[in-house]
Image (tube, rainbow, N blue to C red):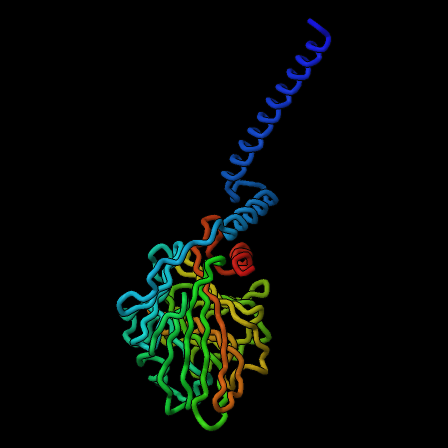
Length: 349
């Protein structure tokens, strides 16, 4: 064979061998990755288990392309934000109350079958000492006017004669984060200044656990019994205390980092909002409030915003973001779980 041809043939053989080795190496990497992915953290070494948990959490939270919003938004008596595995519905006839926040068809909010008056998610002004009980009807349960502005639901209450304000609620989908953005505005319709804080109240099943980053202090329980409280690694965990008489239990507290979560039957409901210092919280209230109505009924997950003076004709706005996730099987659903806290932090990044 001619020298030039022999050299070209040798180079071709080397190229083919390299290509085969590259494909083999790639195949080995894929097989190793598949094997690692199937290792249970329970049987892996601690280092491997931690790495797997982190990798799986990142992969789960950093989902692929954002889903599309399913139209129309206005559907009969309800206004709906539906995208991916989430379904969010508001009823303007009942105080613009959020009646459904569901993942894969499973609603995290309690309905009227649990309590005919106190169900779903609503909004009040704080402090409660301004209006005592029951809640102001114009804001809590009377009809709101409803419109759709682009892909945002806009609902406005009548003016409360007791408080001198109206409330506007705006709901929209954050498709990139697979979350719901809830904006509440207190409008001063009177001729004098008023001072209120925004307050969101969401009812979930009482058998779950509610938790938040520990703040400066727990203020107490008011006229109620205190629920079972556990503090672990700068997180406060709150559950219904079934060792006491079956009655209401309440916690008032300062939080930190601006989030509050509940976990029920491995469904994780996270609220995020601007953190506020104790001196901006409404008198007799807390940035974090958690109420248990009783066993087998409902719990209220209640963040509050800044206590602020609102001049005549002015408004105070406050925004909360909702996430709803199914907890992955490798994350323990129990009080004190650091893997659960890491998952929450990943979702909120």
